[in-house]
Image 1 (spheres, rainbow, N blue to C red):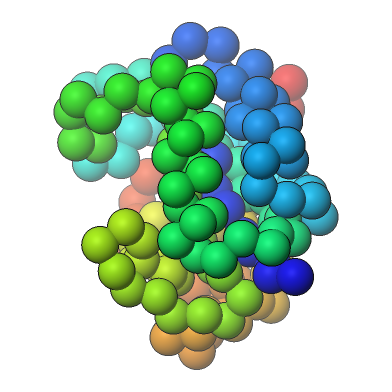
Image 2: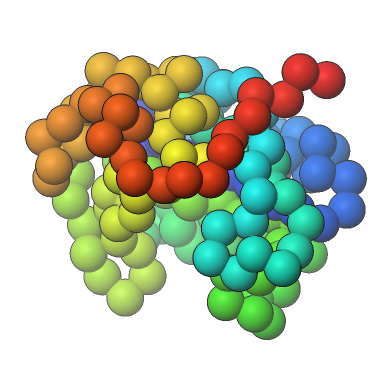
Length: 161
């Protein structure tokens, strides 16, 4: 079995319901849910003229290989109505592979670990909640240290309701 950390997020429609649906579909098609973070809200990163995002980190156990996993993730996004029209634009759901065991994978479909983990607080806050001591396989730093060193200035808020 493979231990995988994912980040799910979105900023279109009923954001909370979309995250819940993504978790259900992940459990159905990808593998067993091991951990789930609180939900965090932040302004859009990059293309800032859009609604705020909700994000959540989850850890699953899967039998799928990295490329198979990414193919299934893209299918889930499509099932949920994800359209890829504008780079960094609004989306109903986004599912990113952050870590896959301690693997380093680089191909046309997937980059693992996710290349921008260390640059984005909206990724690190929920990730640190469920895996503070997980060691980034390339940077050789824990998620907690990556968050401390992160230069991202966007505020991230834990959703309370």
